Image (cartoon, rainbow, N blue to C red; front, side, top):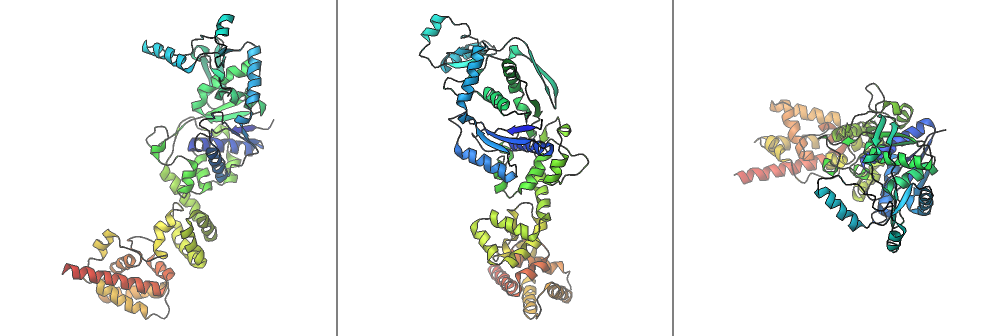
Length: 478
């Protein structure tokens, strides 16, 4: 049978990194083995589940390119099915009604904890008499699974055989008093009905798996193959959380990360293709991915590495492709600046592309291509505008450049270097203040490529503005 795998996010929050990696591994496995990737929305928590979160989850998966073959199926549409299976277990004597209220359970739990004991449900409702049941007739009732005394074990595809005594497992609720199913019960019913062959999920679900194995045994069903993935940790090796930066998939999109780079990065958080290759296309990931190469150790989410990898992907895009990506990513006003002169925008992309790590870097690195600098870098003023002869040098340069009939990379560079020789100084002592005058920054692409893109008029105007600034600064000093 071809693999049938699923991803089952809960719409009580955004799709986060851990769930996104789980979805990716399931998707890669299904695609590589010719199987099916199924999307199930586990929205049984009616009070906390929202359509907004559901839409965000679907949007995240689509952005990553993880298109599903079946679904989305919503557990909230299947309550009658869960009730049918719960009644089947009641008839088999595997479950019983529980009339305990939340307040009663909390009160009994506090008493046990106060005596330094470990609380688990005390089976108060397991053997109620008919008289007691009649007294509780008007109370809402849940259905609890009666955990048998036995050793519970299953073979995990990554960790081997895992065992646990059922004495450590309380009689857990499978159907709540409001008719909604518990996570473990709905999960087992759905995985069985949808013929799921492999359950690939985080190792924080291992405790749930023991309960699910008990349910499979009670129904007489064969369980799927379980593979529990190690955790993703933050840079300080604690569990990944908001304090480590963006953890919602859509946050990374907003931050300027390309989906193919993010997928590539996620794939390597717990899996290795072998060798030292790190940049892998989607088709390569599909052909190389194997459950046998999953890591048993936790992985660390290194945002710097993600930025590096994203930069590699940006640099490999054609200028036209990057232009289109920026248009769909940037705010409307910024996009309009690109659309206004596409040829000019493509030139700017060409000079900035190899410096970009994220799409957000485009205007951060090269805003001066679209508007004159409003102010100059403070360190630049101190280091490059403080020489008493800078004003005179820039003035002479402006005059020389204004007289150039052909204004291009070669002619501008020749003019600057010839002027430096006349002054008897290194060319850098001219290049640095010129860069500051034109861009407001102290670092950036080749100065002469910048002048070529800006054009003669803009270069002259910006030099003139810098000269005025220096003149004003000099007069204030006097």
